Length: 388
Ligand SMILES: C[S@@+](CC[C@H](N)C(=O)[O-])C[C@H]1O[C@@H](n2cnc3c(N)ncnc32)[C@H](O)[C@@H]1O
Image (cartoon, rainbow, N blue to C red; front, side, top):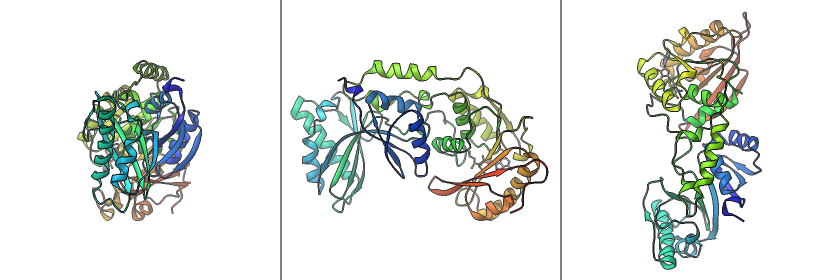
């Protein structure tokens, strides 16, 4: 059987709080779910399918193909056991190798040491077998081996992604406190956004939510936005298969344009950054940008979703200074967004309380290591928005 057709255990990783969205994405793509934990989902995938996952997943970090499990109590055993493995079948001696790790073992005090020992084991194995070894270092632009080592059990993965998938490549211009692309995609999944009704994103910052929305609405595979993936760097990687997967992903793009997407921010600089990012993502023609206070954001006639990610304490401003803004957000939702579904992504009880509207759903997210909530408000026409 061709290497790229053999199903292997594959771990797809994600940021904490995104695993259920990642699981949903994998299920929609027809993948069997073997297990799920806080930071990832296990499935079965061929190398070709790993390529497809790189291109299509919106909420994942890395696609990791399981290579081997070994028992080792310390770094010397890691070296000797890892050196027995058939690295010559997967490592391209002309390529570039890096090793990253996640280690919980009492004998390890320097987190870089296991990486170095595993890299030595791989390179020494290649020199013994074929007399050549790859260059090695910390860049993740070539072949990346991931080591997951807890107590005396070590698992090695061939990283099929390289740089995280959340690094889509369009955000050349981050404005202050941007939301990670994968979180924005998960927020939109939680909102069940599909581009058929309007989306308004006041306080859009560098435009991440609006840009991810446009990508979803156009069914544009987010992985097409960059070109370097580790799956093409392993020995024998089939570039034709990769090109075919890219061509297939391109065909998914919806012909019709979505309902209006409107993004605004009070800072001219934010909107300039957003526009540039949207151009890089190829969706600038789908987003209508405005510089204005959130309450002045033009609303389309047809109702849809409005989502705000304002500043919150521990980042940028402190909660107390922001209470007045959140009071105004509550007023805006109640008066200007009647009939819409309103969402606020924030952190901190004082701010949530300041909105003074009845929350119909709270979904926890972790953004930049801060516990956040996506709050949903059903904004009835008339006076039905209820004071909390
Ligand atoms: C946390 S950032 C949004 C980040 C954004 N989700 C992203 O991914 O880049 C909050 C944004 O709210 C904007 N902002 C603050 N007060 C505002 C106001 N009164 N009206 C409109 N925008 C405002 C800031 O300029 C900032 O860009």
